[in-house]
Image (cartoon, rainbow, N blue to C red; front, side):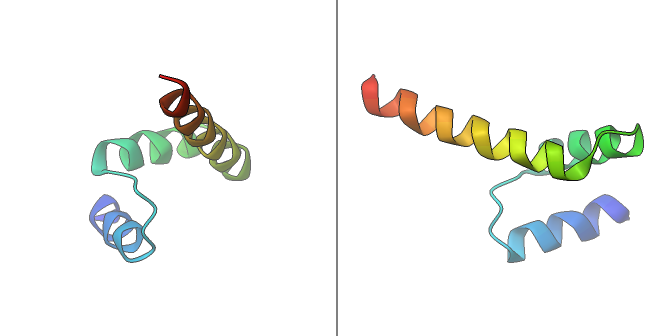
Length: 56
């Protein structure tokens, strides 16, 4: 149920995170990962992904 609500919120906010990714993020947060740090890592990975697409 929680994952369904999170996915709906994610969709409304256009985060681009699918259910599997949200599930992984939720599990990481439940196991003590700092949510702000996790968000920063996801943003950085997206920036790097865009950079790589430009060069290749």
